[in-house]
Image 1: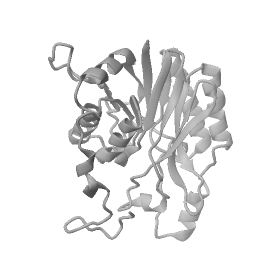
Image 2: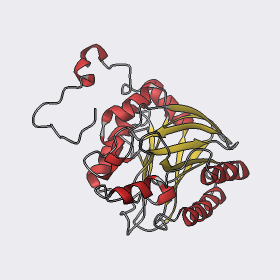
Image 3: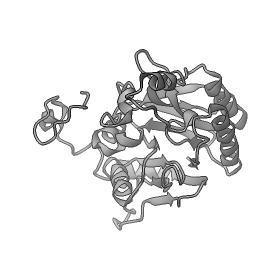
Image 4: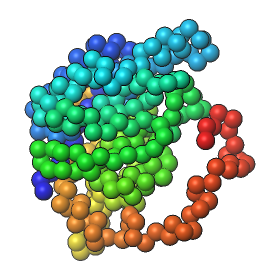
Length: 295
């Protein structure tokens, strides 16, 4: 099994100008393919540049919702055709049309131009502007056919990665690499948290953030492998970008990851799920009660 190369497309958007964002995304995707990428990963909600309405202004909110697009919209079709042309998978993010209120979604397009999975953000930031979105209803893993082999891919979006359950269920469903579009400040704590998701689930993780000045960049990827065959610790960091725009490459050696997962003790083998019933309880108690929470 050859290396799977993920390109982190760290960009600044052209505000909510979808046509301009399409052109820029096309340019960066082509650059990624020239650099040997198998998968190009966009930052969160790229089609409108992670822009939001004033939730208290109904007309503004309705105009914003009208910017949501379907999976057969020309914006999505453009990147499906591009994936087919470049023979490269594209993890494309957009505000997705949905009954009631739109969703914050990513579609995984394979190198043949087919959408093999669409994931909608489950942990929407209901304490903030994302309360205007419909949360997703589940976590999914797809089999992605790349030029360098088949890989099991899952996805989570931004705030999802702050809940260990997100990456855990993706691991339980077979994910080998988790693709993570992002749109917030990535400080040391959040990056360490993301690193922990890789360690505790023995999965490769890759995250693309917006470049400065919209966010602070620092798109990052960690390997699933934290120890060598002799039990000595190895640095799992594959790449951490600075703040500027660019295409940043993360190489994942699937043979190494799969061998490590067979031998090491994290992941699933030694869990005690019979004792975890409280983890799926809907009850919220003090001091964690928030009126904005949607269960």
